[in-house]
Length: 464
Image (cartoon, rainbow, N blue to C red):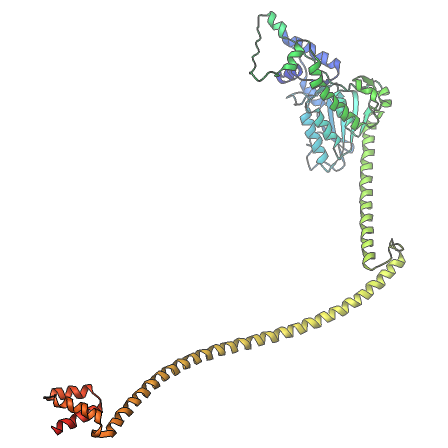
């Protein structure tokens, strides 16, 4: 026996039949006294709980439940024998955690069409029992629980989650739908041996271990209310949900023989393992038929929905033509023929329009090319016009300059034409000539004065 198992038995509430619990009491007493425990063949216990596959008439334990090579239509057989703990013992039975994984794997394998549980157990540890029961309850694959001896407390919770419960004998026992705590107070024993116990709690940890310490003091009410009743209520609710016709009288945790259990709704029938496999085959057939009927109904519903859509589209009177008859098929064919002719005509018009559109697109493309060429020519002419305008501006400026020069020459010419008699020029030139005495001065004067003034100047010099 492992230390984890001993710790669990000493410290946790159990869903277990009292006879099995008392059996543990003797075992724990031997541990306390330091006595040698009797040898137990755990390997045999493990073998008794080995899950396997039934395919046809053959039994095979070499497959894992998630193996894709399992033959189609196989049955998974999951034994639950002995006390149920959460964790599997190394050489002992499987725990509820591993059993849950087995159920989920078998349910998810399409080649497994049924799961059979072979149960002979007084119950066991509370922890994880509800999760195992829920995995069985929620399985899509048909399930049958076959009781071969005892299905008490946690074991019955698990069995009640199956689709059907079959007992192997009328003296098999089922029930014990209740919760208990079995606690052995070993402290006085050790105190007699001189061991002293001291408990020290943090300042704010005033409620730590309160219920437990109350139990040690013989005060059970808080532990019963805060722990056992909570677990028990969930246990009862789950069984009621699993077994809708179960009698309310069974929830006092009494255990019943199979013969009486049928009338109380605890089990469905008494039979052999063959009966259990036959019941499972019946459930498989029901699932298959239901699946086929659902598929047919689904197809019919889909067909009716499509027919309703077709009738509505063609504006049929659905009050008169709510199903597909030969007359409605002929009417539908005539309508489809007329629609096809209309479609052909529309298709021809579409092709003609497409051809015309193609021609227009080509024309638009040609016009666009011409427009681009014209725009390029306009740009070229605008450049030439700008150049011409600049040249014209330059010519106008040069013309204005030439005109001014012409005016100046005309003025000078008029002075020349007027000759030496021009009073103003002559008088001015004479005066200046009289004041000039050398040739350099004469040249400077001629260079800096107009032609008329120069002539007058020369004439004045000659007069001197």
